Image 1 (cartoon, helix red, strand yellow):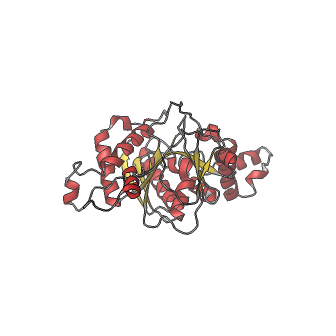
Image 2 (cartoon, one colour):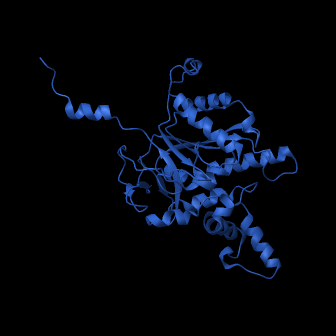
Image 3 (spheres, one colour):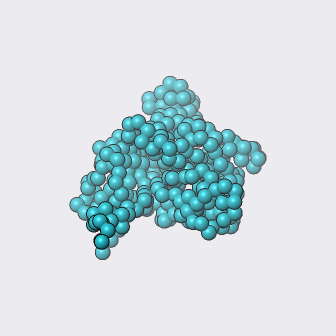
Length: 329
């Protein structure tokens, strides 16, 4: 058995479902391991499908998967943003109430920036989610997956290594268990009396801040500006927001000027996010490699990386198609 490789590599995949032409195989990593590059698709090939972007805090999706979310929405998905915490221990505000309120408004701005249709805030205490009932969180997610008929989820990798934030790994674990239990007929049968039906999530895009089994690179060249904007509207917490204009002002007071920050606050904020948060200083600010570096080996200007898990192809169906004959008389 071959050993699995981490950080930008994936185990060789023997059987894969059929993908549109935008999905290309690449063996640039070495001669045995394969990784799938998902490129932009024209038109709306995903029209009718539903996406749930799930984050513990209001900056998680924007920082690690904003380009992919915007890409999939542009390709026809209807999307929803689910935030599991209330962010009461992170961000701007003189009181805890103000912190919660400011984060709530920023979260709504993120959804709008990425084209997501509605926000669901579950409201658990920030940095304390390892103290809640995992069964309760799982049950609430199962309800939402069934209600919204979610096909695809994007969230933290439940198998990510060295994750220090309990909200991240608790949310990830609950999502992973809820997404398959939502397809069962015996879990929460009272849902069915309310008109819901079993509905399992079939596609997962998992991101992580630490070592991860990566098997998919998503091109975000055409959506990088939407990702930048989604980070710019988060002014309460995170490395984006108005950090660029603050740096520009600080340098000006010292008689210095950084050309990349431009001549106005909007340009400073956007260029700071695009060139420092997403690229030059990405490892320190986000804990992940530069989006440019992720894309470069595959000839992409900007990209995001994931552990992707999709629907398994039916070998039984294939066998029947290839071997079934007329009924024996």
